[in-house]
Length: 335
Ligand code: PBG
Image (cartoon, rainbow, N blue to C red; front, side, top):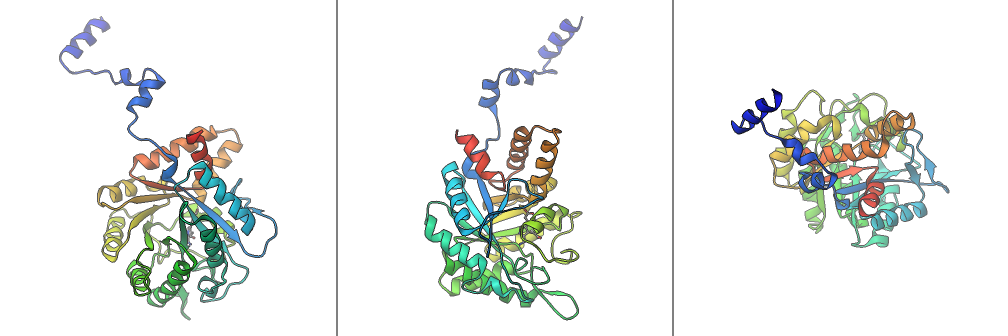
């Protein structure tokens, strides 16, 4: 009989009963190996220059381009919800081929950072994206030469200038997302020489050339034609991420990031297993929009899918998760 058979197997140590650990919600909660807390979550926010009302982003339902006033309110709400930090992006009114707006004192991002820094002080961790793509007329993350190539070393000089402008505006953490070689060293050197030793670098160690950034490009009104395949990583490559990680650590990264998150959980696990610095992952716009679209159609349970996506990213090794759901989920966790 089946029962005799299983009793024998248990006596021989050949069958165990992990289901005992799953019997009640209270037991499952007690033995959960991964927990999400609100302070793990960082909320990315978009400020758009020259608008008088927040503008919806059609491919990211529920996310808007903010005015300065609505940005302040969103920041206050996120802090009240208990998020660990906020990351600012900006959409400028004007662009040019070298991305001047990124380094102008009164450029869109610098103004947003300065205003939010005065507004929040040390109540949260204020981060800013350090990349030229929102500010260039061609939409690339760097300086494009006459032959159409994104020039690595010319771009590094611009990143240094941008780092100083953002640090001066009050950014506490700079997210180096441009994927130029040597960008962490370049930015660290410029910051230190200008006595901004306190400013942290969040290095996008592994940033893949991903179709999941699609909705973000609407969010920042990106001018990009073509791809970023010559500087962002090839989705086919896993070990290359560990190489990028090692370089960023040597160059002085304080926190490292893997992006996107869910399609790259193997990479996230590798990165997390091979470094002692905090590891972040970015649940990007396309990951958000897929959940929104499927749940709008009634195809998945929205809140459960959000929770499962975030817990999976954490389980794979992220200490910090950037997510457009950050404030909503933080509020839910703390309610
Ligand atoms: C580059 C940048 C990108 C994202 C964040 N920083 C997009 C890109 O490489 O085109 C994407 C974030 C998202 O999709 O949510 N400044």
